[in-house]
Image 1 (spheres, rainbow, N blue to C red):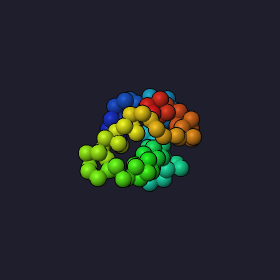
Image 2 (cartoon, rainbow, N blue to C red; image 1 turned 90 degrees about the horizontal axis):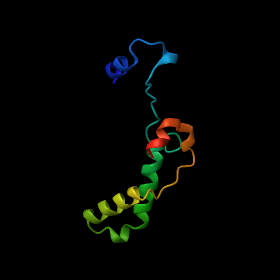
Image 3 (tube, rainbow, N blue to C red; image 1 turned 180 degrees about the vertical axis):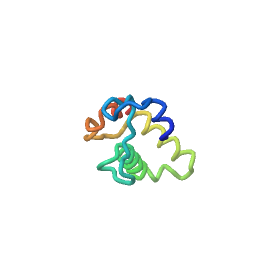
Image 4 (cartoon, one colour; image 1 turned 90 degrees about the vertical axis):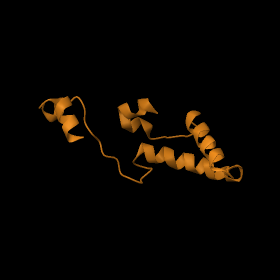
Length: 86
């Protein structure tokens, strides 16, 4: 990753970098947008656990929840460009 960033930023000063890498806190849904979404998707799956007798059903439920974006992330605006991907 460091090599990639060095190639992209081509020895520019830090305030002129084209790309920066932000490290999010692992396992901290309140500080990491990815963890917050995982937590909400897992919570939805737990609510429908009675339908998940087989892994293929759980997998389809998870995909459905993710594709329909059945999650809420109130702090998304804090992450600027990252919020465009969600």
